[in-house]
Image (cartoon, rainbow, N blue to C red; front, side):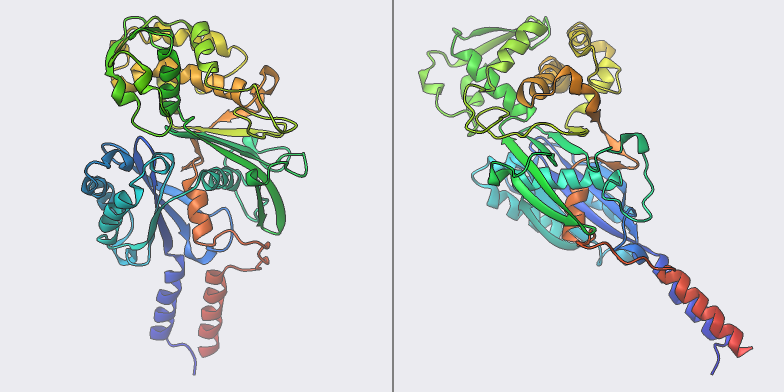
Length: 454
């Protein structure tokens, strides 16, 4: 029996279902804030490559979830607005099949009651119409690895078939790009080194992606994100002060009084509070770039290295290789304040020095929150110190660094790599090439059936 007009209509209606996109949602619960990302990909190509792209990002208002340790219920409630936004972006008939994941990073790694906060978060996520797949604290090694996967996936460096390179000029000439990520509480460095074997096995990962093996070096420095690094610096400076501190890492005119007890509220600063004869710190900025660099360098211990080469604090780091994509937690402040799309070039010191002058006039930057504006002197200088003194990026290596906000339509952070891994969308072996897509195959089949019935 042939395919009648009614049957043909029903067949075509069924085929159009193959074109409905699929969605995935990932919440990045960082130390200072949480972002919700919605990803979309064609259903017919869920095991191919180069098809996943970001369609929405929603910044959760308020603190990061670790900031609600004294009132854990608020951690879950804070996510409601962005979860409602996700319901608007994802078509209603696909809510139940859309997975939701939450990954918490360094802020929660530092929190002793992380399980209680996650329970409150899970309560909110389970009440949504989506397919909740879990909320957990990811390790620093995972965060670095997923960030590396994200950058190389979006740049097409895995040699995925059919992938459109959004930014060909960023593509790594050696096959993959390294990934650098700087958050509020930790920083990660991940890349494929030329040196084999990797001397420290705890820093070694193995991936097989699209039929190729990758031996990856990765390390996460907990407490060396920009917020916690500021605490480390202030704690170091306090040892030689009498409770009043002229700080070169804050712009002239900056005044702040802080309780010493507020500084010692997490594991990044162990002991010390009881040794101080004062209870408050009177902080006054005097904006001196060179002196700021000197005070920051004190938190990087480079006196001991048990390996052939190290970064700092005795951590193994093989020689840097190839290009690196850098994802900065507060990159938008660099762009807004300095007016530069690239944070570092051959004149990084002069460019950083201008920041101290610019920050003296807050009225010029009304859209920037006072916290970021006031700490920008430190943040910009710390980023340069970390890259140069911590990781060893010399002036000759600066041109290998790309400061990334987005690649195409997607943010360059770890969340896309996390979702790709959990949904098994990156196969270990290279998928066989199909002469036709599923939809095209079925469409031709229906047309053939229709012709035979005439």
